[in-house]
Length: 387
Image (cartoon, rainbow, N blue to C red; front, side):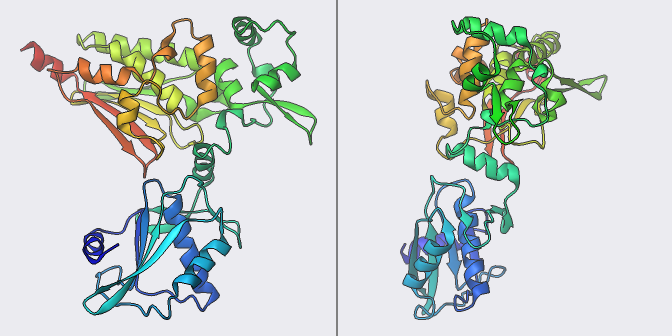
């Protein structure tokens, strides 16, 4: 990094990938811990490379400067490598501005998230301009994105196997040309149930419940779809439950019926909902998928921002985009008689193109909120089109 790039950096406000420090004291244990916390938090936050800038007052951005002899590059590299698991790739530089040296630690984009502090086992993340301990769902989401764990294969303890609809499971087995007898070992091999060696019990997996339970929302209440619309200027909310295919069928049918009364193009709705089901973050228990139908916009809001490995452009244009829930996707390919999942990921461009002349279609990737949104023209855009 040269002086001009540093000046550009100093014009930015603190955020998930940028932190200012007036000073650090790596001669003290507390100083070492604070340094490692900030580096881990920046590495764990979504986005590209980040920076920890030392020698700048964070509120006023006054240049204080640092002593390169005191903040030794080799010592900082050693502290980070010894205390971060897995190790984080950094670069330490000292750049002169106004006769003062500024320390810049560049934290490179990591494909090994999440990183944790070895000394206390904690995972840290940036929330805006502050460093915080990562929540369980955030850690799980990072583990899934890195390919370390598979969300759909995690067990749901204390849920009896009788909650799985045997007829639905047998339908899947038949379509897969599996002639073996229905038993727990077979279901375990397929990922529908999980065998716990400690308790010698079988439990449904998250994916097993989502596909083969008549009402998985009894145990996973965040997995439904909520449709919000207006009737006589009053907001009305309808919540839809059921296994994933039932959920898609019922919510799509309802949304299409609502929009059909306005002569609104409804071909997109099934594509949007199918994509939401495949791509949503099932680790995020804080909210369900929400479809808002209003005069000014129609918004499909889904928990689960796009991974840093992918971009919105890839999702819209690629034939084979990244899928967060790959196990679910391949089972839905088999189970869905309407073949909707053969084209999920391909239809977003068609949605965008279908609204030419009506209004703008936007795709928003909100990493801070862990949301992906599709925003379409509102109902009143059809009235304008008719006029």
